[in-house]
Structures are given as C-alpha cells and as structure tokens.
Length: 310
Image 1 (cartoon, rainbow, N blue to C red):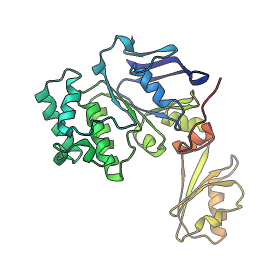
Image 2 (image 1 turned 180 degrees about the vertical axis):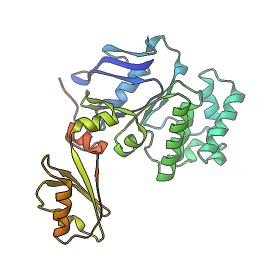
Image 3 (image 1 turned 120 degrees about the vertical axis):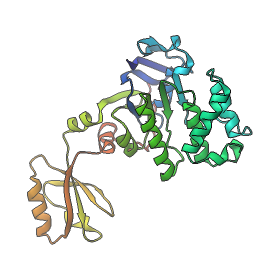
Image 4 (image 1 turned 60 degrees about the vertical axis):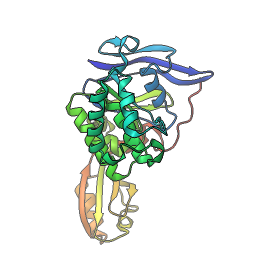
C-alpha cells in the first residue's frame, strides 16, 4: 500500500506549476517533500486532497483514486492559518472532528489529551485570536490529527515554532509513525527533514529532480566530506589554500570541507597539523541533505523557486 502520485500535471494559465511529477510514499513512512517556496509542494498537496483538480495524471491511496476515498482518510495541516479567530480552542477542535463524524464527547477527550501533550492545556478556553503564532500552529496540528487519519499531509508544519516546540512536534511525529500513520510533510528546513525522514522527494520548478531513501541519495552523491574542529576561533584559516580540499562551510564550532577524489584523509590532516593548527577533532562524514539539495537545485531551499514556464 502506498500513496502514489502518478504523472500529475497542473497549469495556471501559461504557467506550468507541476510537470508530470511521479513519486510514491510507502505506507507508514515519514516522507519529506522538499523544495523552495513556489516549487510546487502546496499545489501537489491540494491536488491530493481534491481541493484543486489536476490537469492530467492521478493520485491514489491503497490503489484507489482519491475521489473514491472518504475524507477522514486525510489529515491536512496547511501552511497558512485556518482557525476561527473568535472560537475557543477546545470548541473548534471538537467542531473540526465532528466534520469527520467523530463523537463530540470522544473528540473533546482526545483534544484535551493533545493539548496536554503540547503543554497548552490551559489554553482550551481561550479564543484562537488570543494565541501566539506558535500556539496557533500547535492547535492546527491537533485539528489535523484529532480524527486519527491514515495519511497526514503537512505543509511547512514547523513554521513559527521555537526549538522547544519543534521538539514537541518531532515527538508527535514519532508517536504517529509508531501507530503506522503515513506522514508527508513539506519543508525547506533540510536539517529537520534529515532528522525525521526515511525517504524524500525533491521538487524544483514543478519537476521531481530526485527521490529515494535519504541514505541512497547520499551514497549516490559521491561526495567525500570531512569536518574539522579546532581549539581556537578562526581555525578555518589553517585550511585555506590547502591542496585536495575545498571549504564548504566555515562555522564558529567546526568547518566542513569536501575532499578531492585523490585526496587521502590522513595526508590532509597531517598537512593541517604541519601548518601549526591545533585540531580538536577530525572526522569523515556523508554530505548533508542540504548539500545534496544545493547540488541538485543550485541554490539553498530558502531562496524562492522561479516559476517554471512552458
């Protein structure tokens, strides 16, 4: 069983938003749908939910076209806020659950459970307009999962959350994954995708440019990376101009470099020490998902995608 996006195309006038995209999400997977703003992520999710129609192609869950599925199969967290501003948190959560046929008493009990999970139990009687953006985001997440859907589609779910609340949401992802739920979330925050996802698809200007398990994509990249940490600030200066490496990112805590194909790690380390550097740590590692994304797309995910025109 899988969520199958099969040759889906969507145009808005002369603009080609999706160019025959195809990928599959296995049942029970945590799947990252990665791309810059404007790349086509939101359009794809809205077609999955039948909010907008595709011009061509088909989307299936458990081999059935989406038009044949009951709405409660899906849970959806949109990127934009979708709460009723003057309705209390608990009342609107119960209302949203009732749209899927849930018993109001059971929904109220489950809503209180989730509010406690997200450490906002005291906000049950507050109006949505009185909440911070981060707490509104948590309430919207609860609304998406309250009816226990089989598939969760989440558009930039970590937007507006501080590190503590990012951690709480990650815990919720792990819990839902443990229940066998399928989670598809879009993001341009590569470090979160790398921490949570088993597999990803990368979309750029309406086209899928890579897909597969994170491990397979890293191995296929063929990049040899290393990380230096020094005992003093500005240690990356010891690496500048060194044969066999190129500096990828110089940070306050460590510096990442790419090794040339013929560079020997031990020899690179020896040359750095011979220059007088005090190396605290040296380790080889795989390229990050962010580095792979930049290789494939040509820019960081934070930079908006230019719209693909026919």
